[in-house]
Length: 304
Image (tube, rainbow, N blue to C red; front, side, top):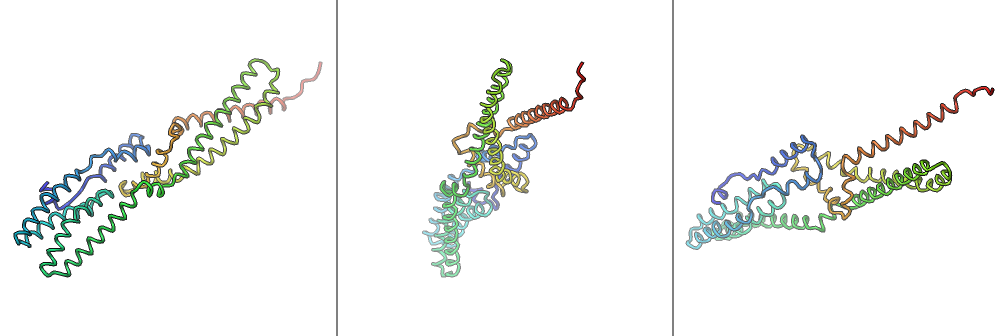
């Protein structure tokens, strides 16, 4: 711990770890937003509690003992040493938590150092240190107020997330209706042609409603998801993923919604199935159209 407080640089390696994770996920085709968002939460963090305890019970106490003995120069040096690590963490940290920790480590030593400077008659330095301490406390208060659950929820609105979930639900209902109509008509045809006209008239409104719902849900999903797609693309193309990491917090709104059992709609296999089903339907419609066209255009055979 003494070596940590004597250090001249601070690096938690978060930026390099995030960049490595991003390269690996892209290489293996695992660039899912959830993995990219929640992966850094599994990183081992520095033992910030031990840093605070060591600063309080060793560095600051040693400086206070020197101050009691009248050795103000040694006390000032010890207080500066206790605050230096906090400055490094505040300046070179990668997260708001590190910034808050750095400010916290500087608070007590700077207050004692300010008192020593006032005793020694260096009023200008004391006033400058007081201004610096007050400024850092304002920064800490602003950061703390921004990371509350209410602030995060207001920062990342869930309106588009709810629209996505509703569009997924609409797609599920519409696909179920269309599949039901298709199976129903196929069974009626297999059972015989009698009543097929009445059956078609009965399922026509249902199939039409399912088609309209499918179209509306698809359009809604496209525009609601566009902001998420832009955020993911910007994160993947950023030079430093740490600087663009906040973009991924938009996906946290999707993860926190109660309708998570619709997550399979976001899978690649589902969309391949939709494309294959849509292609099959288009091919069937085209074949029916061509068959009817050739049947009507075939020359009439002369009657015998």
